[in-house]
Length: 508
Ligand SMILES: NC(=O)C1=CN([C@@H]2O[C@H](COP(=O)(O)OP(=O)(O)OC[C@H]3O[C@@H](n4cnc5c(N)ncnc54)[C@H](OP(=O)(O)O)[C@@H]3O)[C@@H](O)[C@H]2O)[C@@H](O)CC1
Ligand SMILES: Nc1ncnc2c1ncn2[C@@H]1O[C@H](COP(=O)(O)OP(=O)(O)O)[C@@H](O)[C@H]1O
Ligand SMILES: [K+]
Image (cartoon, rainbow, N blue to C red; front, side, top):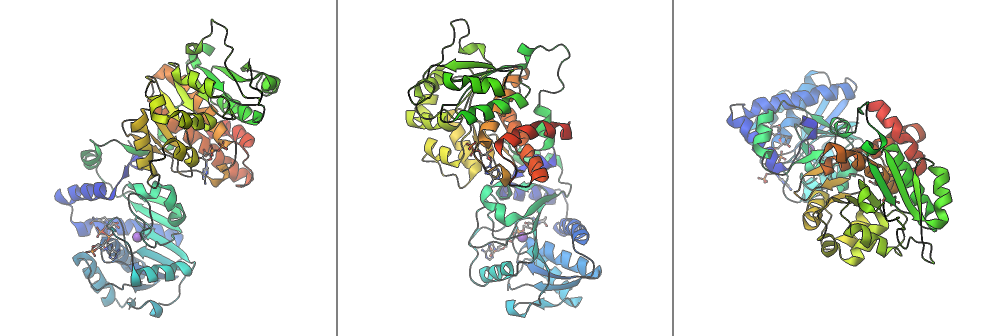
């Protein structure tokens, strides 16, 4: 595990830091080390000599900010301090006294602070536990209204460390310097607009202390390039053959949504899967053949609305001849029998889009209870709510953990920060993506890509949730790459499929 992978709650961070102090590291020394690292980063970002306003809170977040204030002051920046609190923690108070003794202007009244272009937010860190109110809330609104660059220490002040919820009001940061280990709240979708650009400031927390605190609880991890690349079916064995690289069956599409079937097929193609079969209604079979000549297109009998009515598999090729089945994109809700059939099969299964809506109608938990093999659900928030009406997804980490535990499935909740959990509560969070993906069809691409990767993973016995996480990472990295070359408006789902391969060229 690399530092960038760990994700902690405020309680876990408190325990980890507690071990460091108990081992003899003086708190003041750690504060000096941490704030020194932040000062170094800021001196690279903020032009020399500029005016910098330091917002100081009552706890050690404020202590960090005061050390930063002192360091920038000595480096020639025009520093002032806003510190409206009457009761400061001991160490914070000492730093405050020293800053005043250096002649750094300090203000307690908000309307006295001079204007400046850069603010350092050291009001609250992972010690914030209750709603921010009255004059502190007013101050945060006041500084947000300046629309200047704000650099937050550890977390934007006002965000709940674990859920990312805004506790009354929160600083809208341009950049957030997260200290030591990623806080869970920074990886939650609802926090995104407050965090700005987030980066980790590593202050050499010993792995032994991390393991001692996180060891026994289910891991909540951040997907990184390292973890994702490590799960890819690369390099290939020189003596492999097409049946050793998995056989994926996609069941998708309808007369109304032919495009969804094509996009899912193209996502699967990009995964490198050895054999690809795609079951679609007979009437759109020619279309699929023309887009995916390498795939075996199975034309299915269709309902009068043009949905798949059942699989016409010839006797010899029954479902269990496939490594994985991915079912759902573009099916419409008129294809319940086929969804029931695949759920009742003993083949590893991905359910997406309309297959999820049908599953919700059939009864999520009761229907899936019968399954003994791998099931992956890939809802977006709307589908999630239909599947699990009683699970709140304010804390998306808790939401996927609960849904996975209830169903025994791996649950991927799509969004700006996609979260994945296995039934034991092991969570992956995809912390890098792009709003360019927020377009119809990009989810279909993910389903195909994921199906292809899972079909290949069966060979390597890779944990299912690791493969699902790699698919989410690969998919969003392709979106990021495409957006960089074509802007965030230029990533339609078909284009996205064309960028999937470029990602690997960049990273392998
Ligand atoms: N552990 C370490 O030594 C290290 C910590 N580090 C740094 O310290 C940060 C953690 O420090 P922390 O624990 O002091 O908490 P922090 O967030 O600064 O302040 C919370 C204080 O605010 C108060 N308060 C809370 N809610 C409030 C509200 N709504 N409105 C008003 N007041 C409110 C509350 O006081 P209370 O009123 O509850 O007595 C509490 O004392 C961490 O994020 C990192 O930046 C690093 O330097 C590494 C070494
Ligand atoms: N704001 C966003 N930022 C980053 N990724 C997003 C955002 N909104 C949606 N996505 C991603 O785009 C895809 C949308 O999938 P989905 O909603 O299923 O679309 P569709 O069903 O139309 O294919 C998902 O992978 C999701 O994670
Ligand atoms: K802060």
